[in-house]
Image 1 (cartoon, helix red, strand yellow):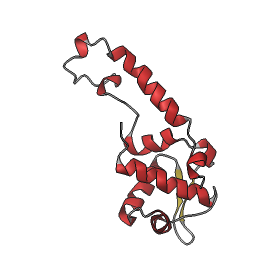
Image 2: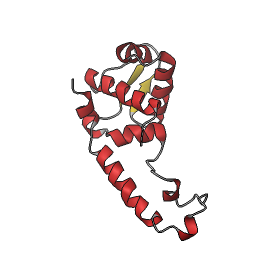
Image 3: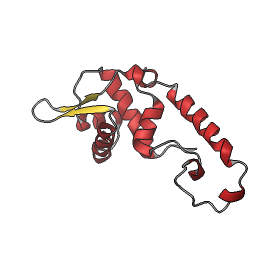
Length: 134
């Protein structure tokens, strides 16, 4: 499993935001400058992270974004899922998808949920606070 560049950049940007503190208002330009994430990508990610409830945005003078919660309560799993969607090692863990030709005879399918839960648990055990330490 490999994270997409967007998920990686989201982790980098939120780590930078966490180093600023919970209540400080930040801009896409500031986070782009600090992290090296290209400004258009930073803007796109800020929208996704706000939509996912990890950032809170404010418009107008003094606007920007801030962490929606304390960095200790935001996990790596939260960030990855905000960008990538639900953690799923295979399509067959989604009960609504039936596009696998092996589904009817697959003896492994019942075990994929255990694998997914283990991976999500591992990612969920790493906080943004930990990731933001220098």
